[in-house]
Length: 389
Image (cartoon, rainbow, N blue to C red):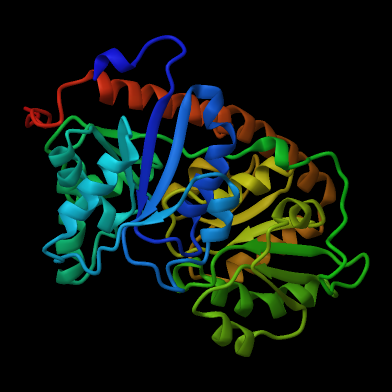
């Protein structure tokens, strides 16, 4: 396949993801396609499972992004026809490289790609926890061992790679760290602050915004416990929660005064532009895109010392980091920044520079293009995967 890579060549990439649910990986692919052509990439995307409402949440977004989404129809991990279904999809796509995302795709796509004679890259978008039930440890082992047999196993942060190595030590030299990118042009740090008119927040209120799926690992409950303490010191402060997910009903029931739920939104850049600062109280993170977007918007940030968060927020320079699960520490950090506008401004400016230096979308797509070229010009899929000494 080396003859396919030459000046001006278009490289076709099929991305295979577990599902088209509401998650960071799906949104990243839609963003990526906006600049892929600049790097000579032609992208399409496939969902590993069959078409269901739960697996189709971001289908309109991916379709509008021009990714030609399709469903492979694998019903379960032990589906006896899984590899052949994936192999057929890979061949029908005519791709030069297949890129798997998330765990189940990471297990099934690399061997199917070998059957199809196409090199495979896998990105694992999570941070493996050091302690987990036996069944989860087995899944983690399968995810990593299968993924590392392809051309590259990509971790989205150094923290995620380090955590992965503690749980499943690397056997091959295919492990890579590649930060995801953000389209910085969509986010304006110019001081223009106006929330969308349909968000019910009193004019002039300090707005602390959390953009995250409403799932337990995102730590929304900690922010809700912290919020009465924040409002004691900063009356009228609003906690704006953007996103949806399985914990929404429980979170709404636990919310007190000064908490506004905005639901799932497509105008996150405008919401961030109208916010005073950003917050992410996560209990675990591999690489929080929402914090990169906040930095790109020139916002100071309060976040937790988990996973790859410290690669997106520099404590005391672009924001404040506090221990996870500690509502008092979280409240104190938020109050500290709400009461110090000059410090917020300084952190926001430094955050924008950090986003430009480390997380620019076009840099990310260039790095991916180089990774794909290496996959194509490297050993054939049937011979790849020698054990590292």
